[in-house]
Amino acid sequence: MQEIIQHLMENPDLIEKIKAGTVQMIGLTVEENEFLKEVFQSNLTLDASIRKAWRN
Image 1 (cartoon, rainbow, N blue to C red):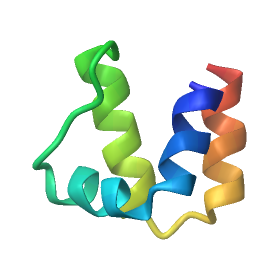
Image 2: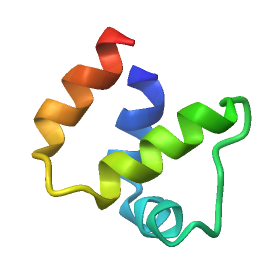
Image 3: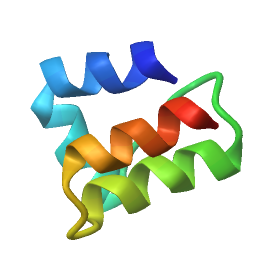
């Protein structure tokens, strides 16, 4: 998950597509894809969200 989030941070256009629900990350479960969408749509700070993802 760390590598995926790092990749997304380096490619902000993908973040926008995830937020819009137009793409999903291959190799992730439905739940993991929903988590990424939730993280990037939320008002949480990204740092807190990343730490939460890394614990999972």
